[in-house]
Length: 484
Image 1 (cartoon, rainbow, N blue to C red):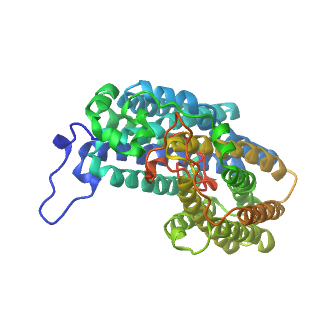
Image 2: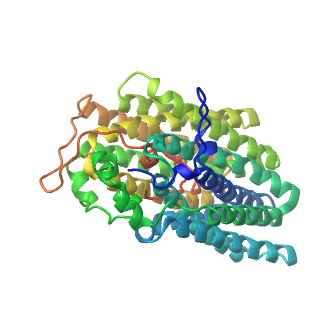
Image 3: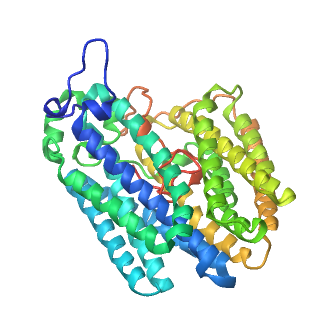
């Protein structure tokens, strides 16, 4: 597919030197900046609000309060996925991006004004989290599908690389700032900062002229759209009608190995994503520390995930062997704070856990791309993300409730004990299957295009989601869990 009209917004490269894409293409640079602002704001609000609940507002029920808050922040990305997909397919992408960012800014601005004038009721904080998560659940997948409109075809890979890297770094920055801002300026400071970021992002989108509406993009794409199998998997990205897809039940019925692996990761997520509840409780009750410690733990987890994402493809061995080994190491890392109860142990634990999550994501996304027929990949990865994201509210609520009755060190050990059987099940699943299962051919009526690697923007890592607001490659994956 070809980005239309991008030449006039692209800065020519000097001979022998090419500027980064965000500097060469002003349209994409503005949208990329809006992505940085919205995703950092969303992450900052969620991490900061959880620390506000645990450290200041929730009292003896801090576990359940923080777990419920995270669950509420996850629901829109899972529940609204079909509606969001229809909105993105039918409405101009610039409008969807601008309206979602502006709406989030107005919600945050109203919440900030309320917070500055009087004590914020808990119900209002939860309602704001729900509405902001809903806006983010619309913005993130729409941004992904807008990339072909903003850049030339040759720059699509670089653009999606910028987008994925931004998700990781913006989430990391937001996670670092959230607890620190709460300690310095309270919840009011967090919400005011988020309002400014969202409104600035909306202004950037409003000042950016997209090359054409969805219909124009579909009409001008021409043969290039049909030449690339990856493009045919997601015609809605160009404003066309979504391709007919087979039900996920039928796809998974033909792929029993993939079905068993997905069940393993869903079970692992129930225990691993609880770190977003357990670590603030651990900081408050065991370390008796402040928001800077929560920020350090967030940084360790994010940095570990990035390193794992870059190094996972270099590890030898079958995916199930590597995955089972990483889950076993992840269980040991989760148990470490429970056994030692020190800040150093917690930081090392988060760094190792993040590395394991990054490795698992890279190895199994690549495996699924080989095994799932090309014509079914778009629907498969979207539903996979929704399935794994749906475990986050359950995990948050269960471990939040347990946190009011058990010590955080005990919760760390419960997490570890829950992951170990999953590691064994994944290893056993690999033993039952051939080392390299053959991909299943798509049935007649659903021809599978020639094999083609899926674009990074369409990949959803199957391991632990990083956070509901992140479209980060694993750990849940942000549970922004969007269906791209």
